[in-house]
Length: 421
Image (cartoon, rainbow, N blue to C red):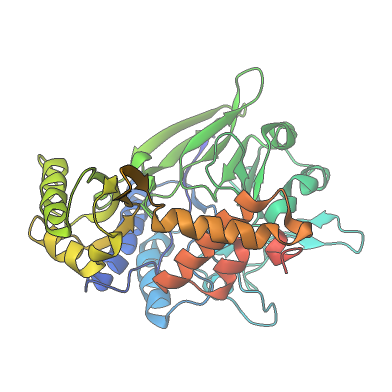
């Protein structure tokens, strides 16, 4: 008989913001989305559910996050539908002498955490899953063999051959937290399409995760074999451009895959660019800012408070510091009541002197120039200035938001930080 399953990934339970007073509501958003997926799995009476990593937003979660996760998974357990999962980079704990929250869920029977073991030579062993121990690398359901491999970082391509060598069964699924270049916007932890291709010879369905944009990877002859549902909710700004959902999949006896992308309905996330070109003073700029935002928000029908990122651009006749974040927030709150607001000030100041108009660099440009100069001063990093400046700013932004653990910051670094000290 064909098997039917739901494939979701990158749920990011526990994600929230710590400002504007909307943290509790945003925290709940991700649980609501996940609960809807689980409810659909029970309604469809699927054979199993796959979670391709990053169930949690950080490896060290609050006890209430764990409790709410169990509450959502309980109907699945009551219906006798196995939930198979692997760890993503956000689920990591670097101290392997501690039991992770993912392992705890597996030991309690709410998920079946798939994790292979390794031989002394580095080869993979996908041992049968032990229900009592809540551990193993391989499980068989309805004549289909599901293998699990979590996040292994920037060296993932070097592991593909060993993964294939460890598999000797038919009708196979691989659950793998990795992205595929040219499809995934994620920069770290990806493999190239040609490096992923050998997986198509061993597995009928490769269940991906990691990137938050949905995509399907096909063989050169057009057969789809690797599927990434993306994140079902908008985790970061920039994702508002992506479809959000999960896959309902039927794997036929002959290995043919029939997949349906089922859309979710995340809270509105908006990235608004407001051009203040030519504003002579801060008061004029604030009026234009409010009017510009109101125009861009006109016609919105979703009653939920949106998540908004505002990008200010243009050459102005005053110092950008005069548009403080507090003044901008007050002006925006007269137009709408966002659940969360982020402001990126890319304004440049125009100053006149001696009959010649000069444009001063924006704060963001000055910051990038200084960082690039500091990086380039070390001969070891010359030629990589742009890459390392981008990484430095990404780390800075995450730390300032105050919503990440050390594990997530380390996951941004190639090979978990090796070579970047």
